[in-house]
Image (tube, rainbow, N blue to C red; front, side, top):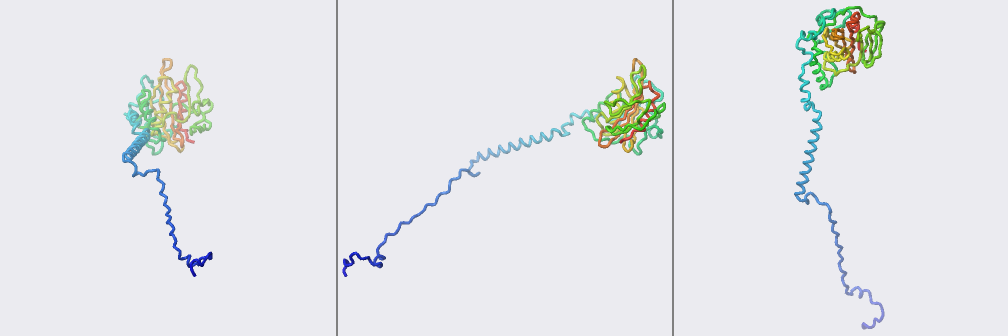
Length: 340
């Protein structure tokens, strides 16, 4: 059979399989490149930029440390030392130069019967009406609640330089019996604001408006006299000191505000006491002053009592010589003071 004999018939499959084919082209898909990063690492920064950054950070750290030091040292006691050097140099009341100089009456003072400048030593027995000494108490130091060093030193230094108030006697002295008879008393006044109790006198003494104190009792007015007896109690109105003794010293100076202008003090007693279960300090003194050209005196005493969780309490009594019959009431008051 010749090739043309197939006509239009289908070509056998074995013939089609042997036909020459054209190879397909190889398709290659390109891999996408990673996107370029917009940030640079530390290694990509120029060195001058790195140095500048380090320098700025170090400067900020130095400034911060300086500001912190200034704030911390602003209230440092060492920085306040120059302000307080003068006050710190002031001697303590306890280290008074001598008892004799403290006991000397102020210029122009007059001797008054029953008011000796200094009574018998503390070691002698106390009278039944006098304040009781604290057993085993150190005469030179009875601790007081902590005080601000600045205000305490300044106030004490000023008091030591006050010519109206001599230094306390070096050795303790007890309160002696004063002339007269004690007034009748009925119970006690409980001064809860100050934390103490004191006698409530009847008849002779009268309750009065307490302000500016916490409690107040007065003797009747005397014709022709400008001053009369007064018994008051209140929280201590002056800066507390390191000892009750020094605090009592400042309190006695404060009482001159309730005497005629120009009044001076002569000490008659200085002793530790027990006010109930609390410690205290008692000061007795004579107040010298001039009224209408005449020299006059008042007998006075105060008890400073340590009160728990409060400022110490002051019980203060003063009686002029125009009412000297009531001077023994001072012994009654001082022996009856108790902490609440």
